[in-house]
Length: 151
Image (cartoon, rainbow, N blue to C red; front, side, top):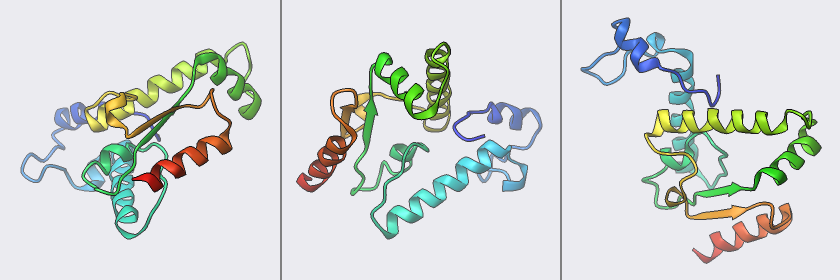
C-alpha cells in the first residue's frame, strides 16, 4: 500500500463516503491507502515537533512545509548508476533493472502528486539536491551534515 496513490477521492465521492462538512469521513470509511497516509502524516508531524529526525519519503517535505526547522533534501542519480546500485544492493535482475526503477519512480511520483498536489522531484521543493553518482555515501552524509550545520 505504501507509496501507491489511489483514486480514493473519486471512489469516496461515488460511494457517498466523503464528508464535505468536516473535510474527512470517519477514518473507518477511508480506503487503506488514505488511512496509512493520514497516520503517517500525523506521526511525522508529532516526531518533528518533539525532536530532530530524518524521514525518507512519505511526502515529509510537504507534510513539514510549515516547519521552520525542516531541511528537505533530494538525492538522485543517473539511470546507469541507479541500475548498478539496484543490481548490487538489491539483487535486481539486470535485464529488468531499468523497468523496475522506472515503475518505482512512477509510483512515487503518483503518490507524491496525489497527496501533495505537487510534482515529485522538483528542485524548488527542496533545500538541497545531491547527485549520488558523484560522491560515495560517507561524503554525502558529510555534505548533508555540513549543510545543516551551516543553516
